Length: 439
Image (cartoon, rainbow, N blue to C red):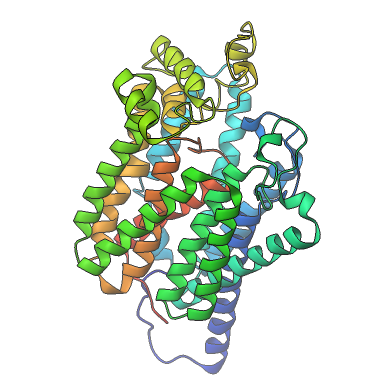
């Protein structure tokens, strides 16, 4: 979707045919990559048999699959994407993100395992880059994205109708309390609901880009899924993110939308993890929500804060705290709602960033992934030709900023939550640096 270069001289029929083939291949690969990102390489796997923190990389399918995808999409990007567009990313903030994670490996208990996980995260990012860089026009991208979203929705709704045991939480196991909630092709409703919320945002983008029928179908079917997932927080965050962006667009006041977003982030933080730090905030949260513990998350947050205080500057290393002897060798607390020894994350992406990277590293991560994208949006949206795409990416960044208060996703390898968020962050960076061909 990058800006093009001037063609020298006339184009021969053979050259025109080759260019058309390249454009078609690029568009197909971008759409196919987005579809794989959404579907994952192991859909409908049922209840997890391993720790939550290992769901993305602890198996050969993901390890081999994403290496292969990185080779295919990396090669295709070099062959078909605008070289000038790729060159403009040489000073990308993503270099800082991966550098912070790499430096943290020195603190990891098992540096080799953490390094392998970081490699997988890097391979998955090649897929994200290809999805964004390969389409030669925005029309190619939005058409492919709409088709990818509809194909995923068709597969999931087909499973809901024909094999509901695969797509709906059952009454058995530790997740029996979620019986009847839709989880689609993912392992848990708390992962599926945010993914379908972001699909709804793609639908809005498609609608605004002129694909009215497909856009409306994506929005309606995605929102229906979210409503049946039982994820109350996602149902609340989705309209906030979409509403703020569209309000800013309709009023012509994007800075107002960003200011209100910052206020919303502060409020969500205060009413979630803030409740374990302040009795007053806990009382305020109790007056608003019937579950001030957020399904027992408050106990996990207290535990995480305690261990952050023990290594505040260096952290414990990338993916080197949960499911390691630091936690698993503790004695079980029979009074707690959760057995901390089996937890896979802090259920708060900011606390996990502090645990992994320490205060300096977490601050850099939050700046690069959640603050700098807001600046990039203000640069991109000045150009009317970039606004619809920039609005899509901003919706996703805002939404995942809120979701991060209750779930963890930073650098979570091939997790679709992380990759969709990474797509939006990288998309805003690219949109701030280059124009988009419309057709």
